[in-house]
Amino acid sequence: MAATRRPGRNHLFVPGPTNIPDRVQRAMLVPSEDHRSVEFPELTKPLFEDTKKVFGSTDGTIFLFPASGTGIWESALTNTLARGDKVLASRFGQFSHLWIDMAKRLGLDVVVQEEAWGTGADPAKIEQALRDDKNHDIKAVMVVHNETATGVTSDVGAVRKAIDAAGHPALLFVDGVSSIGSLPFNATEWKVDCAIAGSQKGLMLPAGLGVICVSPKAIKIAEGSAGSNDRLARVYFDWEDHKKQNHLGYFPYTPSLPLLYGLREALACLFEEGLENVYHRHHVLGEATRQAVAAWGLKTCAKEPKWNSDTVTAIVVPEGVDAAKIIKHAFVRYNLALGAGLSEVAGKVFRIGHVGDLNELSLLGAIAGAEMSMIDNGINVTPGSGVAAASSYLRENPLSKS
Picture 1 (cartoon, rainbow, N blue to C red):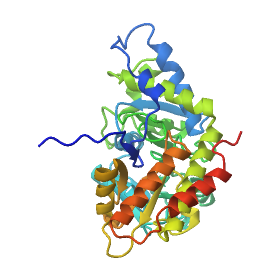
Picture 2: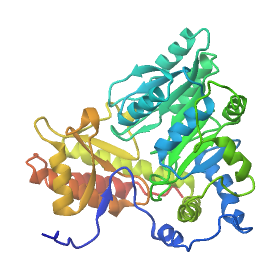
Picture 3: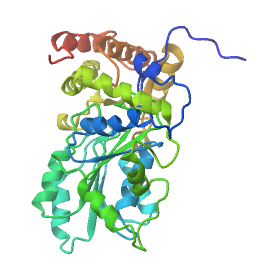
């Protein structure tokens, strides 16, 4: 039997992929063209410079890969490290877990610092581990900036201070897939050596374009390892191939033309709004969501306010309730896509993504839908309470600072 058509649009409130602005979608409707033509660099050369601004970088090098953020994780590791190298990583959610798993499978020796899910990276523990590493065997520190599984944001600036306080030369790798373009990110100030982003989050594009901003220090290390026999193998993700072509405006293999045109338009959207306004808007929408959660009498997965993410809120359901049923009901009954709990928090939380192209009324629709689905599934929530709390906060806090 064919599925019954549901009128109206699907309300997408997972923490990625995010909603794509209409103008960005239109920008991607382009015919095929020759990516070796003399005119092609007119599109690509500005992208390498403009994208750096979203990373908060003045001296980094941008590489654009036809890939997701997972591919860019691999690019960071394989271009700078050798088999058996030791890396330090904090694990506090599904995505930090997956990055650690990748590092191990590539042949790296991973020192894992376990943190409670609902918290983030601990700068003090990182500093101590680096102080104890007298021989500087640890070559890199891996941190997920924004853990979407639990709705937690770590303090990357504090991690950088910890590395510097320890006087350690380790590289700093940061997964900014669900933060870059939505949360303040300062690659140069924080001396981030590899900052990783994906197109489907704050950049408001479909998945498929992976972006990495690489520091001069990491570039130099990668160049020094080019002839090493024990270097990690890479082909598709090799920076050297890109360096030979990018400065001319080209790529070593066929790029995704629609995504490049989309990136140009998405960057224009961000710059027209102003990055400070973008960050402020995400903070206001994030806090409005947290106000709704409090009004429902529920708690977020983030264990303290300092961990709160402004791009996604993970909401803990009452004991005995299966969060998956709330998510399924919201989708089937109300055409609302909410994020599921992952791994250790599967069935325990549902997630409201408030990232990318959205405003007050967009968010209130998601809060109303989540509220109705919870009530339908027997959770004792006062009808309208979350919407009232969020709307009250939003009326008092404009999305733009200017």
